[in-house]
Amino acid sequence: MARWAASLDMYRKVPVDLLEGTKRGSILSYGAILVMVTLFILETRAYFTTNWVSNLVLDDNDESRVMVNFNITMMDLRCDWAVVDTVSVLGTDQNVTAHVSKWNLDGVGIRKTYQGRNKNQKDIALFDKDVTETYEQLLEDGEQAVSLDYHTFKYALDDFEYLFVDFFASWCSHCLDLAPTWETLAEVMEETAAELVDGQIDEEDWDEITKEEYEHAKAAEKPVMIAKVDCVLHHALCQENLIMAYPTLRLYVDGEHVDDYRGHRTVIEMADWLVQKEGKHEKETETSDSAATIAAQAARRRMEIEGDEAKWLNEIKHKYRRGQNNRNDNWDESEHPGCRIKGSLMIDRVPGNFHIQARSNQHDLVPHMTNVSHIVHELSIGDPLTRRMITGGKVEIPEAVKDKFSPMDSNSYVTHEYHQAYHHYLKVVTTDIEGLKSYKGRQLKAYQIIYSSQRALYGYDKIPEAKFIYDLAPIAVNYKKEQRQWYDYLTSLMAIIGGTFTLVGMTESGINAALAKRRRR
Image (cartoon, rainbow, N blue to C red; front, side, top):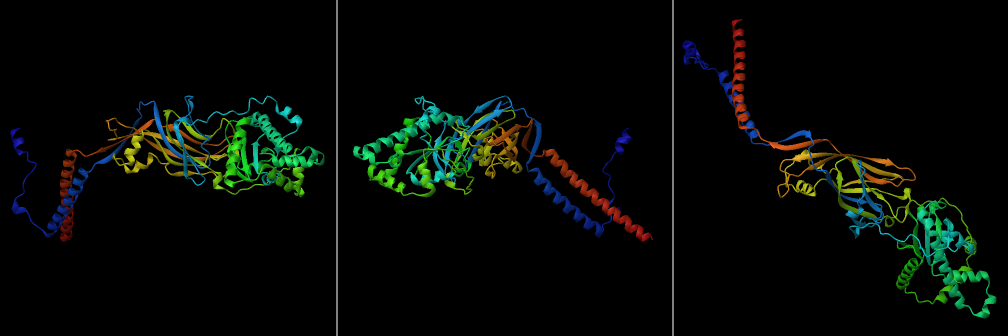
């Protein structure tokens, strides 16, 4: 045993006298040294470099809800009608419009007034409860609210300084409720005109005035012409005037659209609003003519009208309609105000969606005129501090995933056809990043979003909506930086030295054997 132990020698020496140096061996030695030095430098650099390592694990996030942060511009939807709802598979259906901020935008996207927070659509009186007569009873003495069609609407714009029009649909419940109030308002204007005309005519002149002249004078003296347009019968006219909801109560002054009435739909409230608009217009135009002079001039002008327009004026008390399917496709940016919607909402950690749509408690919206084209300025999930730390470079994160936390930012989704809207499908992946902590040391969760978008078609009676459908993945991703252990580094160095020495030695032995065999031949 002792002899065997003494004979164990793994590093036996060859006598120097038996060693022979060659030029070939010298070249290979220098090559071996160069290879070992190069590999040593590369291995040392790799040792001092940290690398991102990702792991897939089951999501153990114990948060029951998660925050969604959004900043979206609705390009052709008024803030008055823009609402935000959330729906989940748990049955949660909540309107969160009161918890978001809105800014009105003009037709070219310039931000206007701050609409404010907690702006639920205010409740207004949908009709005048003091009007006790039914619509049918009010029509027994004749219809005072003049029905217009495509041609007579243009005549009315030319013939009346103030024209107040109710654009309605026969199937609209709010329109049916408003009909008696609207007819009563027209009767008030008619009675006011009659009183003004009666006060201007002497008793001895009554016998000389014809009924036609009296009606013309009364029409000229009427403070505001009250009219209505049935958008079911005259679809092209309503579309040309960009009527998006029923009823739309629109005031025209000197043939130009001035404003839409959005207050309480009572006779007194609407009359006071008209007085305010007339006063503003007269102040701007510096009108100084007396009512009698204006009435006389208007009466004379109407008496000289001939042709189709005169025929319409003569039959203004009758239901005179002519259908026309003209359409104007010109886009007027001033007629398409938008709305910037910004806020956050808490959603359950279950599949669901949140959507932005047009809805009104006081109107029935026109489906084909509802455009929910939008721009996503920001859409992220999780604590807003997480986004600020990632975008601000306050936490290291793999470059490959930096854009996956808000991939929809600055994207536009425009629909060019009726009854269409974009739906966005979001797969949300919980992400843990080493070093992502709050200022108080709390570990923060990040959420990657994998999305796809497509246009959805809606039925002709359905209001389109911009929908964001989300689903949280059961798998989470962990990112952390790792550095090689010191013993791994030493092992690599020894492998470089031993491997290079062995490989070069084998190469030299092979060359030497080949040359020896050649010499023996």
